[in-house]
Length: 459
Image (tube, rainbow, N blue to C red; front, side, top):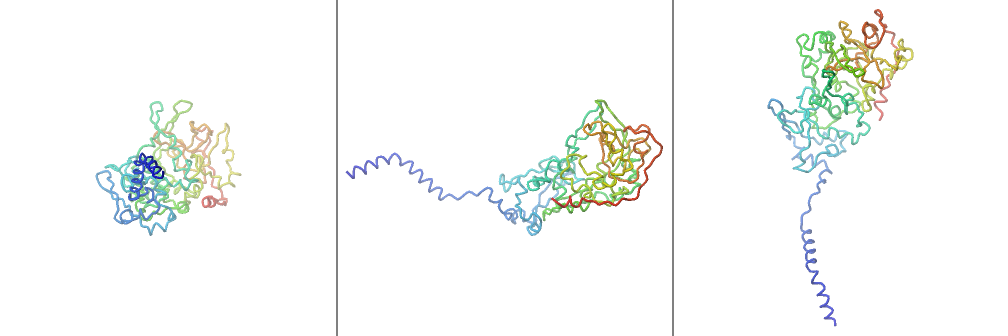
């Protein structure tokens, strides 16, 4: 009876033998098989990146072919001792270098955009791969990954995330006149780059030994009256600066807000240029072509303007802009003079100019500035109302860039005002009545407190 039961159990087991054997085989195979490495495990320690075979190797470089066939070597060595002395010492390398993976080799080919961070670099700024027309400077995903932690600063309204004027910029055809600038072209990426452009410490050097001469008033005036090559000097070179980030790879150190607001060195690397002779610019008014003469500008001359003005010439850019750079929805959304000069606004001699009829507002800077186009021979216009801005009609200084009339916010501030030269002359375009040669003299200074420090320092 017992034997019969055993035979019956064996007959039931036989059909299952292949499955049992297969499972046993899999178990044995897996037990002997070497574990596959976790693809993300290497990210858990910076020592993997900083090993002597990789970025811990002092001789590790990247070869970049540049225009002319030369090869420039970019240092890729990161000194762990220097890095742990920085504010980011507690972060993994891959916290910022988020595009680094184990695909296609040790960490694959991270996308690189060549051309950024170097004002007088080559113009090829949109190439993702190095070729014979690339540059020493380039940006990677790490250049813009700051927003992952610095959410408040990394918003789309930050002034340098995308320059407000660039958001709607393009080349347009105004009744046969090509106006505007193709900001998406390779030239602009030399300056309009990333968070790291300003915050990643870099060597800042001028292109020409004549760079300090641009701050001499006679040269500034001579360029506007005679042209870019006044006095036999290449003034374009005198306003070109390079921000070379490669010198900082070793330590990966960053400039904090106190450093940036305490000096103009970083700002002037891009905000440096000069006025050019008055020229005709174009805009549309009610669908019709409108044109007038106004000062042309070469790049962004705010640094020279500030230095040559009669007030604020010793101020830093951060004195006014330090609290707004990361929250500036538009050019008009920047700091206002009355932020500090509130006492002056209440009893200003031209208080009626601040809000005119028909909803027109005149900006303080329209009067408290000088050396505009109308100062040179009277052929140009200093201020106007941009017809393309419909939400708030502002009388603002005007300039010409790429044949287009633009509102401009000059930084050559002055306490004294020449009413006639700025607005009240025959043929002006702001509707001001004509008057004789009238000026508002300099009044005794009214002490005021610059209260930007709290706004800059506090989160």
